[in-house]
Length: 160
Image (cartoon, rainbow, N blue to C red):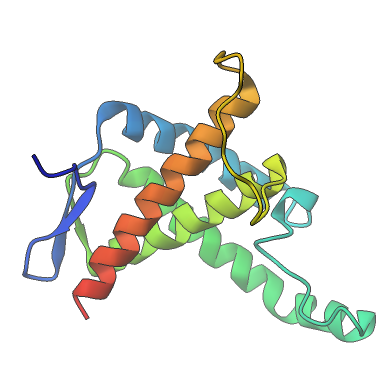
């Protein structure tokens, strides 16, 4: 039996989205949370991976850069999140919608990874006691979103 794929190309520039109800519920919960942080305080430290410092050696140039592009970047991310929120229960996506999913899932993972202080050295071992803690649930969501993103990128690249 082949492993389940959350998204598959239809061969006509559209994609079948095959999310289970629990996956849809996760997206429906987590997207508005990130949207709220972005809309309320785009300078929140949880967003540092979304907006890395472009000029760490020149604070003046960094401030100028942020002034020039930050609002546009925030607007684009909010629009992507809105699209994904609207499509949480969708069963079909077009190319623009798939791109929005890729961007939004990546953004969510970056913020969640910052919150969890995940680094490249993280081994994702499960909690020794096996209990669900807020951190273990968040780590599971992070892992799931990585799996989902991998499939989205893979199917998007196969259509090129």
